[in-house]
Length: 102
Image (tube, rainbow, N blue to C red; front, side):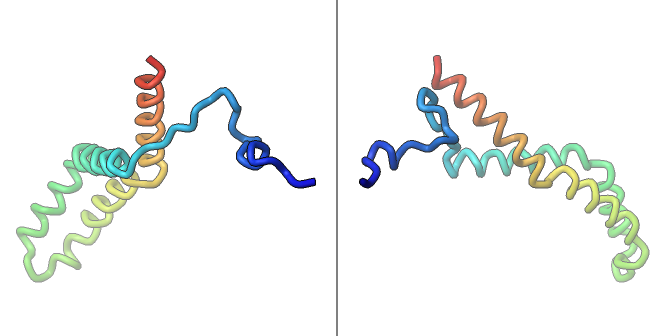
C-alpha cells in the first residue's frame, strides 16, 4: 500500500550512483570574500577616480562626483552579482568533487 522508506528516500533527480556534494557555510563565505576581492581588484580605476574626486569636493561630492560614483557602482555591481558568485561556488564545488574522488 504505502511506500517503503527506501522508495521515499530516493530522489528521481539525483542518480543513485552519485554522491551529493555541497559547500559548507565557511566555503560559501570564502567564495563571497574571493568575489569581493576580485571585484575590488578589477574596479580599481573607477574606485580611485571616485576617491580622488571626493577628496577634492568635500561638501559637494554628491553633485560633482555623481558620474564617477555611478561608474564605480556599476563596475562593482557587475562583478559582485549573484551570477559571479554562482560561478565561483560551482568552481569550488567542482574542485571539491575532484579532491574527494581521488
